[in-house]
Image 1 (cartoon, rainbow, N blue to C red):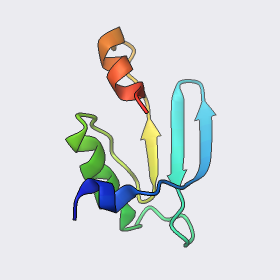
Image 2 (cartoon, rainbow, N blue to C red):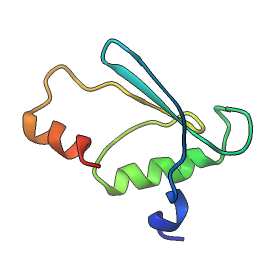
Image 3 (cartoon, helix red, strand yellow):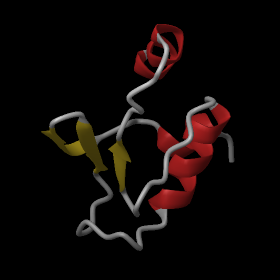
Length: 79
C-alpha cells in the first residue's frame, strides 16, 4: 500500500500547542490511543518525506530543534 493510500484523506481530530511543541491527533474513528495502528503509517509517511518524527499511536508531536536552518524548516512546513 502506497503512502497516498494510507493517509488520505487526512482528517485531523485535534491540534494542540504549548510553546514550540505541537501535537496533531489524527481521526481514526476510535478513541485516541498510543497503541493505534496508524502509528506505523504515520511513521513511514513522514520518513519517506525526510522528516523524522516519532508518532505515538494516532498522535504526532512536533518539537523543532533550536538550531534548525531556514531551509530545513521550510521543507517541514510545506503542505
